[in-house]
Length: 254
Image 1: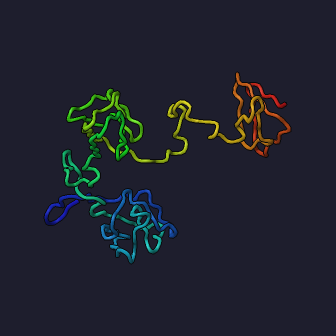
Image 2: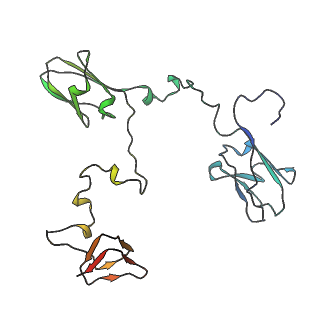
Image 3: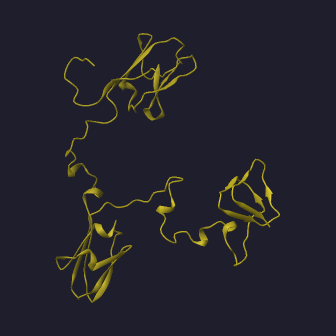
């Protein structure tokens, strides 16, 4: 884009692709392709007439859509220019310095303790991100990873530390956050051995007292019994409308 004056130091000046926009006198909101931070960053022309921000159009969907006050009619022509997208100059390699970081990212978690008596374990005042992220020293001597174990926030050593020993533990890793897995993202391979206990199962799946097997009296979802598989259910049983049981193997109703 041509301009008069100093070259912009940063920001993206671009023409919005409006080829997918459909004007029909009804549609009023259209995607900008990228987020725009302020309505005044836009130059909008409709039928070769520059439109007035906030009066003739505004931003919607967090700055991702352009919304006209009056829906354009079929056959109307439009172009939109974005004068600087959200954000500042691009971050170059090595451009992030320590003073740009939040305080919690600049300071490693650290614990120091002087033992008043012999002990082979100690509770830390933080939960480490991982054992491998710890720098552990005793009286200034850095300890090898096989010299200690970690369980939660408790660090334990192979042998008791002497009285007056000074323990220093520094976590050099990034603190782990707590998040909820996306539905369907947890597979058998991501589960630890014995991670699923009887107490986690629906009551219909639990064997209350071996050899008694309890099942519900109606089938509410379709199921396929694969070839080479056996399946059984204790009746009487009701199959909901629209539910199908596909038997490629063996299915027995007792």
